[in-house]
Amino acid sequence: MAQFKKVVLAYSGGLDTSVIIPWLKENYGCEVIAVSADVGQGSELEGLEEKAIKTGASKLYIEDLVDEFADGFIVPTLKAGAVYEGKYLLGTSFARPLIAKRIVEIAKAEGADAICHGCTGKGNDQVRFELTIKAFAPDMAIIAPWRIWDLKSREDEIKYAEAHNIPLKITRETNYSKDKNLWHLSHEGLDLEDPANEPHYDKILELGVSPEKAPDTPTYVTIGFEKGVPVSVDGVAMKASDLIAKLNELGGTNGIGLTDLVENRLVGMKSRGVYETPGGSILHFAHEQLESLCLDKETMHYKQQVALKFADLVYNGQWYTPLREALSAFVDSTQEFVTGEVKLKLYKGNIIGAGTTSPYSLYSMEVATFDEDQVYNQKDSEGFINLFGLPLKVRAQMLARQGQ
Image 1 (spheres, rainbow, N blue to C red):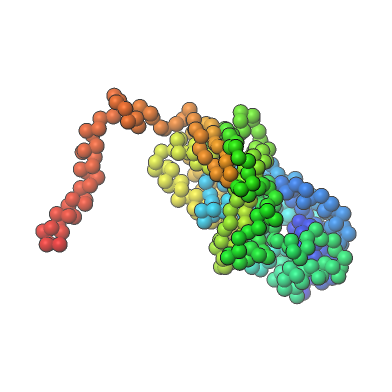
Image 2: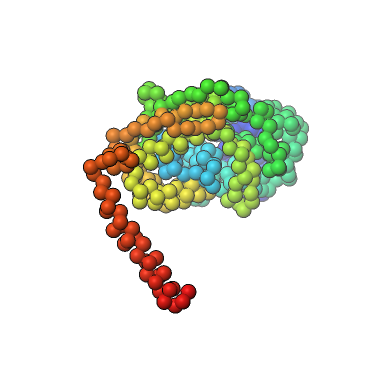
C-alpha cells in the first residue's frame, strides 16, 4: 500500500466509518482527521466527537451545512422537478457532492495527502464523492477501504468493531444501511434485499407513520412560492431549511412520502430501498400544481424533458458539471413567474390538491368555461382541425388511390 501521513475521513459515526478509523491507522500508520457534515440528520451527530477520538481520530470537524444544503441543492433540484425513475427524490444523491466539497476544503487546509470515504464498491455514493473530489482536488489520493480491505460484509465489520471495542448503536437485527438528512431517510439491506418481502414499516419508519396509522381527519396546509422557491407555510415566512423541517413534521404525521423502490444504480445493478421523504413529497406536488398554472405548454413540456436529464446528473454525482449548471440556468429562467400559493389536503398517505392561486396564472376561466362566453369563437376550431388533420387526410387519400 502507498503510505500517507495525514488522511481526512468522511465520517458519519456509523458502522463503516467507525471501523475505518482504526483500520486506516493499522494499515497506513497515518493521522486520521474525521469530518462530519450536518445536513440535517439531527440526533445522529450526538456524541460523535467523543466516539471519533476514542476510536483513533486526532480531531473531528462537524460542519453545519444545513442551509447551504437546502438553498443550494434541494431548492434547485425541486425547481427542476427532478425525480429519478419517477419515484426517488434524490435525498442521498444531492447531499454527497456538498459534503465532499467541504471535505476537500478541509483536506487542503489541513495539508492532508489523502481523502477516505466509507462507500461500498457496489454503491452510487463512491462515484458521487469521488467525482466531486476530482472536480476540486484532481491530484488528491482517494482511499476506498471497501474496495481493498479483507472485510467482505457488514457482519465482518461488526466482528471487527467488537474486536476493537468500537461502540455501535446497531445490532445484527437492526443493521439496515441508512442515510438521513433534512430531505429524507433511506433504508436498505436485511429483509429489504428481497423485493418479495413487504417492509416492516412499524419497525423501520422514523420520520413518520404508515398511512394506516395516520389520523382519520385530514390536515390542510398552504405553501407559498416566489419564483419557484418555497417561502412560507400557512402564511408564515420561513427559510428553506425550516420550511422543509415543518413539512416533514406535517407529512410524517399523515403518512406522506413513503416509497418502496427498486432502482437502477449507476454501477449497473438494481437495488431495493425504502425511502421516507415527507416534506419533499409535499413540495414536489405543490410545485407541480403551481407550474401547471404558470407555465405555458411548450415550456412545461420541454422542462419535463430537462427534469429527466437533471435527475440523472444528480443521481450520477455530476452536480459540479457544466451541463448541470447550464440546466439550472434554464430552470431558473422558467421560474420567473412561478409565484403563488398552493393549498393541499394531507390524508393517510395521500396529497390532494385543494386550490392553487397565482398572480401570474395563465388559466383563464373566461376562455375555459362551459358557460356562454364572449371571447372564444368555437367556429374557429373547424379551420384549425382541418389544417391540423391535413397530413392524415392526404395520406388516407393516397392509400385509397392505391387500393389499400
